[in-house]
Amino acid sequence: MRTLRFHHTGEPLDVLRLEEAEPPQPTPGQIGVAVEVCTINPADLALCQGLYPGNLPRGVGLEVAGTVDAIGDDVTGVRLGDAVFGPAPFTGPTAGAADHAVLDTWFPRPPAIPPAAAVALPMAVDTAQLGLDLLGITPDTTLLVSGGGTTTGFAAVQLARRARARVLTTAGPTHTAALRATGAEVTPYGKGMAQRIRELAGGPVDVVLDVSPPHDATIPELLRTVTDPRHVLTISNLAQARESGARDAFTEGPLGHRYDVVAECAQLTAEGRFGIPIARTIPLTDWREAIELSQSQHSGGKIVLKIAEPR
Image (cartoon, rainbow, N blue to C red):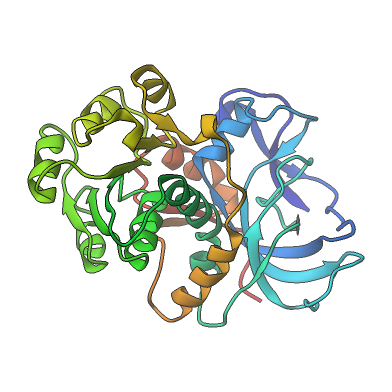
């Protein structure tokens, strides 16, 4: 089968190769999937650069949608041919950017959801919900989501609004209308952002979830929107947070995956009440284009690799 993977660490465009490999076989508790689409995320780039070192070669593509084509021992509740999606394991010689993948965790894909819309959900929803959990969001919270136009930010805004919190967010013009449609209050990022936020909120916000791309000025500006540095939690501007007394999700450690919320969001997506923007759908053979778009940090949504036609 075709697979996109690396044999040594380095810059993604230098080390990734599209090559042939043996299809993975599901072990007990896993299913095998004939992959239709997968995603390319910043985490894939970080894997190539040495995040979570382990045996090589390693595959990329950490979210998958496709149909079940093999079932491991001790697996129940799923049949061959079922449409599924989920996060792909990333410690083996192949991952989701391949003709076949194995999944430890999966969700049924409702017929109303195209594969690309489903595959965009797991990482964005899980990461966003964990951040909201760490912040203790309630209906009385006034929350600022810094980076509402990112996929995780877009998920966080929708999840916080569903929790009935007041949500302010920073975003560019691409997603402003969609974010406002959720009930969020949107202001541009950039110079003067902190003052605009305080004016919108009528004072400091209660807490901040920062999912914006890394930038030297981000955390100092966000600190001006709160009364205490500990009210700011970031998943992206880690060094700044540690220097300034703000919180970062990696130091605090995960609370455990919130895959229950991913399943809920899949059903909401089928009903037209939730969604993650898709930037581009790119054929696997043009994977370099997908990597370059991800590296730009201005993709405008999930980058989806098309592996095969829907079955």
